[in-house]
Image 1 (tube, rainbow, N blue to C red):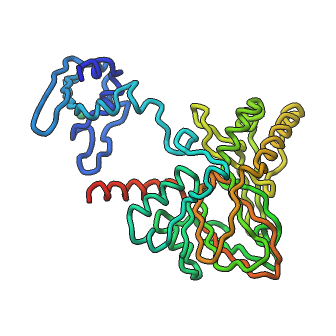
Image 2: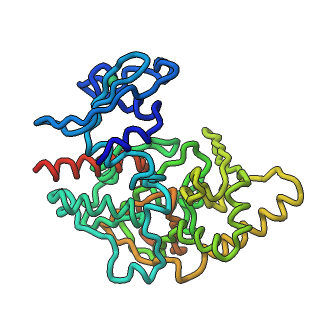
Image 3: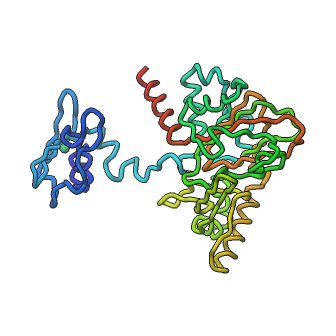
Length: 367
Ligand SMILES: [Zn+2]
């Protein structure tokens, strides 16, 4: 490495990353200054290679304030502008996912036994990594106890309590406030698009499934959106731009949120899908925009129903499905309301799951 990594770096960026104890609290790594505290006319006055026992790197003396910064060579290798991390994603976009159709997962469902998941760090890492990469993991043999779904959520994050409670009962209710709590067929959808922020992880724990019907299905919404972009780029574009209102109301609750069906990141990469025919509201747009939106919405809806995209399986007692609610759509077939089918569901979030995964890996590396 030569000093060009220093001289080619924009001065404010380099100085903002000074690792010295005056710039960052050594106890927690948090930054001690604001962007507005940096002197005007900031420039590198001199650069010198240092090769000590502890660190090899480059020492910079700054003008006009004479501040000294020492940049380790491995830090510059990893972060210098134009390097390998350029336009790196946050792990949430299609760039960091393995998109799938049903056949891609035949014989390789991301599943683990509960005992192995609890007892073996590498199994837990693999399961959580599957939620990030494929959008889901299936735990088998989870004890069929009331509220056990909350314990599962707490193995990787924090339960997101909502108006449905800490958990929700998916079974036939006498006066349902949601079609999920009937025996009706439920087409592929994401949950709760009427919340802001939307719950990013969903868990479904099967306690009983003796009903005829009531099988489960998953669809990779990122894969479907990528197909739409290839087959009808104009429709894709419309669905990323038109805000859609979703709403939910019952006696105690009135929720609404407005987002596009397909959310993309600042680089245009697919990042979130919202799709729920039960809670989509009335759009207020000009007639030409409504024409375009409805053609695109229908096209996307048809794509999501393609049988080859849908992974079908049956949850049996003790199965707990953990999935990314910003990417996967879930569905179920109709079932006889007299049959015994009871799932408990809960929401959690991807940031907690990502943190749990990073800490498990850190502990694994230290062990
Ligand atoms: Zn400093």
